[in-house]
Amino acid sequence: MSFATLFIMARLRNKTLTECALFGLGASMSNSLMVGFPIVTQLFGDEALVPFTLTLIVENLFILPLALALADTGQQKNSHFFTAFAKSLPQLLKNPIILSIVLGITSTAFGIQPPELASKVIDVLALTVAGVSLFAIGGMLVGLKTKGMVTDLSSIVLGKLIIHPLCIFAILIFFPAMPLLFQHVAILLACMPMFSIFAVIGIRYQYGGLCSAVLLPTTVVSFITINLVVWIIST
Image 1 (cartoon, rainbow, N blue to C red):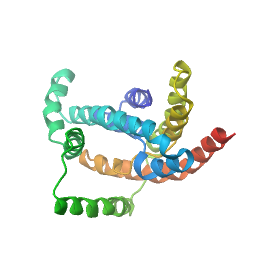
Image 2: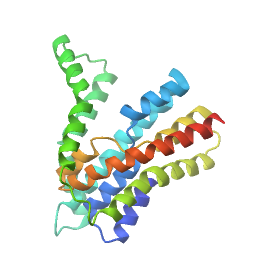
Image 3: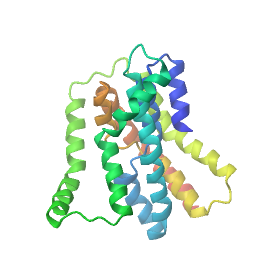
Image 4: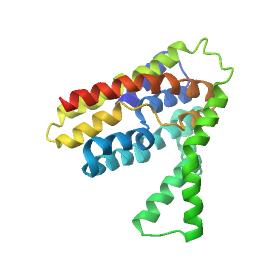
């Protein structure tokens, strides 16, 4: 819902299809692993792993591929939407992010374990992800002028930290039978800032400046939304 809301809002402002897809992605994909996981497990313990995992599945199998497919579609000029969308699907299958998700799911489903040496290399690289991404984002922010970006930045921040939680809350109203723990985890994860590689994805479509710039205010303001929701849940 938050993806569709920001997508439509951007479309009404005559943004390109690629921009609309990035707006929707930024407003609907949380930093569940780096920020959400430690907070959720600290508050709810191991019982929260089930709803947390379900959230990851929705984000990585539905929201992210949809956003990338639409963004790739927007890159194809002078083509009918459905024709361009059909052409973007093969490109999506070549995307390293999608390939890594498919490989991870396949190896888990079939119990495939990489060789010990490869596993150690993967673990070492995994430890560097946060630092490298922050370094890259910081490099892009140096000298970046946000003049002319204020409306776009505000829209994405509003979409991620206000509209996204409200959409989740609206869904929970229509599905009150959902376990209370699932409701708490869902609404809390919705209050997180967007995932950190949002800037890297933006670079692919020549919107690295905007996607990098929006990470800072969203992360800062998320301290308020996260603590507010934690306080509401605890009381």
